[in-house]
Length: 171
Image (cartoon, rainbow, N blue to C red):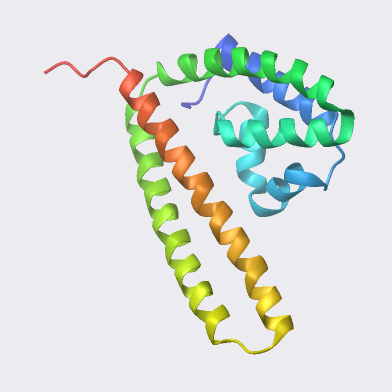
């Protein structure tokens, strides 16, 4: 999002997301994974300069369910969904949003391709490996590569939907 004051809907969702993460044990679950793998991206989502992909929100809600119970997560999910949709709509009407979404889509397509290549290479390495410890380590890496591919695929679908929802450019 361009510099300046955040739209009210974006700020409200960022506040909600900060409150949600305060309810989670730091350094554990998906919250811990996101903080470790992409601390700048997580910070941008928490301060409202970026709207997180929905799969990130779902993962945080999964953490909430694990740590605080299914009822707490269900209640939080309903509010999260409403605030998220409003935040995305407000964010995407800002100046330069189409170009920003297109750039993000290009990045996600690259991430998806890279994850697919990592999966292929890791599957080949597992097939060629004889040691159980190496197979186990490579299997864990393969699971992460598949998760990266799955998340990139979901984000591509989400970005396509967001771009489609934008008013067409004048011809």
